[in-house]
Image (cartoon, rainbow, N blue to C red; front, side, top):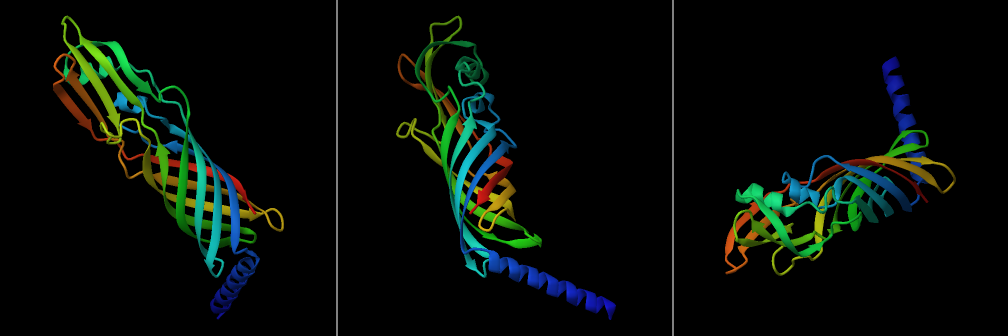
Length: 261
């Protein structure tokens, strides 16, 4: 009997707590957050390919989010827009001659650079996410919202084309390197990388209308950072060799802080 009474009291307390927080929760809220994420793996197992892409080890997002409750103030949808700043490439000026020697089997040196872009500094990328969330009270004034969403990030792959000379030979090769499935028609164009986002957002009220936010998040990019290298005879323009490398699916984990109003 005591157990039944205790469980009943606990259930009533939980219901009253949920109702109290539901009543206090507004139907529409705006969030401003700063999120810091860290790459759990590299773009590619090919060192040259990863060296020239934005460094995945660190990404800082400045994020604005619109949250709309659609069911009893506990389930809703969200839409966020953010500016993501990723660190400069690890080695944006790495010599392609070493990569050519690795795949072609002969030593080379770089005679002339024909095209090179996107290798110098940190990069800013546009992000947009749509998703759903639900909200659970933990203790008085503290709640947690699991969030699941899908979105995309803009990224401009680097461009690199050079003429390589084979050691102890008069042979010249035009080397072209491409990322994310680029070809002659979209070489150097920006691409959209889709991702799935999983977040745990904790909220604690600091005023009548404002809340302090902190949370943890995980982002998974299903699209692989494919990389290809093509070597063409500079004299007769015949393609000598083409190598295609399957990239990795980038995984990132991090945390966020912000305010809601």
